[in-house]
Length: 180
Image (cartoon, rainbow, N blue to C red; front, side, top):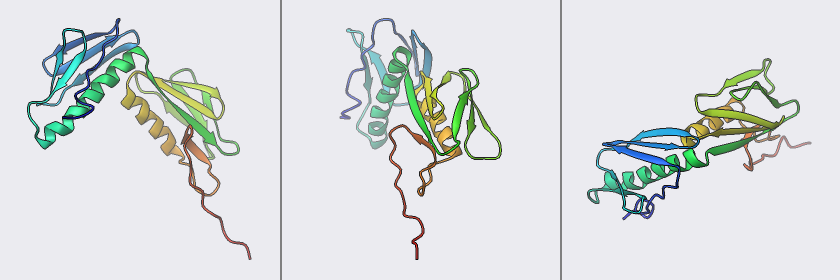
């Protein structure tokens, strides 16, 4: 049995979960998320209000999907109650970010032009300092994808460490040219 898949999913008060065949809809104070569950896996509501993810047998594919589906549905419940956020740091002389409202960013990353980034639906940007970016939203996958896309614009380079990195990310540094 999957250690993650067998755990019940607690549903806090104020969160409404609707199971309609394969579609699971979670509605909470921050918004609504919908997910279609993979074929053999089933989600059932227990008497105490928690959700239980079940698989029909111990085939390899079903075992793989069991924990995945449980994690995805749990992330939906957490997202509509607390939300998710990712922090990015910008390192480099003259590198900075400016907010163009809650849904757009303008990045100066050493290119000849500023880079504009627009947020997809459900994602908001916050710039607490010129070298820090906070990405917030209710969908964990979307928040992580937007953070990865922004990081991809100018990855941290190994010699001086300049670029966009996740907050707390360690960049392995290389030695430069050896002097004579």
